[in-house]
Image 1: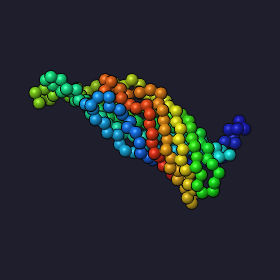
Image 2: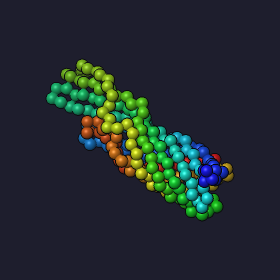
Image 3: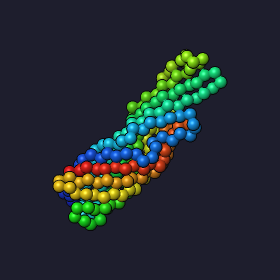
Image 4: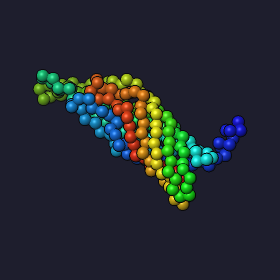
Amino acid sequence: MLAGGAALAQPFSAGIKAGLPLTDFLNVAQGDSTTTTNRYLIGPEVEVRLPHGLSIEFDALYRHFSYTHFDAFASNTVTTVGSSGNWEFPLVAKYRLPGRIVRPYVETGVAWDVLLGQKYAASETLCSQVCENTFYPPTVDSRATTGVVIGGGVDIHVAVMRVAPEVRYTRWAQQYFNLDGDLHSGQNQVEFLVGFTF
């Protein structure tokens, strides 16, 4: 109870974290698929700063992606089009080096990832005409996964705001999106993020 009370008494900050993925969210195993991942991640972040340069941070980061997959046969082609939202929830412990305005830091922790709002459609083209259009859920191995996070950055104190650019690497435990073995989620993820907290 005393430890919990001490933690609540420490400085608390909240803000927004945004950034860009440096690796593709989906990997194409065959040459007949295309993917589009929106080039942004954005969401809220909260942080509790502890003594001796330590802190705990939790983020909720959102991205959107879409894909198109083609299966060509002798007389017809099946085109699969899909999209989904993706939420990433990292929980990391951070250590900041001493400093007044600029403080480098390292971080490590865990993350959870989940797909939401999936949409999926397939159409078959025969003799250059669309002869069939069906809707059904995508082939997904699992709708959620966990991973290990490591990263580092610089905490810059500007007036009443803190700006923290960083590079973060996540290793996911499994590929939790898989479309017929041709298109699947990657297990290695690198992101450039910038946090703005008050």
